[in-house]
Length: 168
Image 1 (spheres, rainbow, N blue to C red):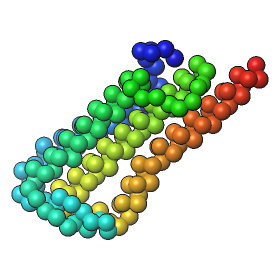
Image 2: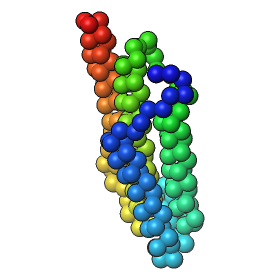
Image 3: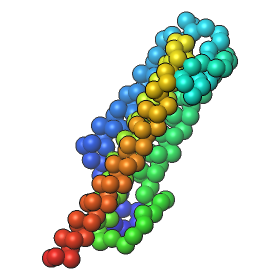
């Protein structure tokens, strides 16, 4: 793959992107719709057990959407500009393209899951719902899943492609 060359988005990547954008749009629409009904003071922090342990103004509900948009933009830039990061190893052209596509799919999935988790946090804060003790381990697992799946797919796929190249 040459520097500056762009890979087309796969169908899976487009679905992840559509999911992320849909969650962001519905999140914004929800906040706009219920803003006047949200109390002036809302939870701003949840403890390790998911219980509310800090309060602040309802304007604090705007922080998570802002952070989510920033992370979305940064991860989108990473997807669109793969020259910004390097992957270890020397691979043939096919393996390099495969790895880049896998990495982009993983970034798309991670972006969707981050947006979804942040939206859930904001919803719980707006409705005064505790997260529950399950939230922290579940969130960590959900965010690690695309990283591990992507690494495994790249490792196996590149190994297979390199073996095919040497056999040919």
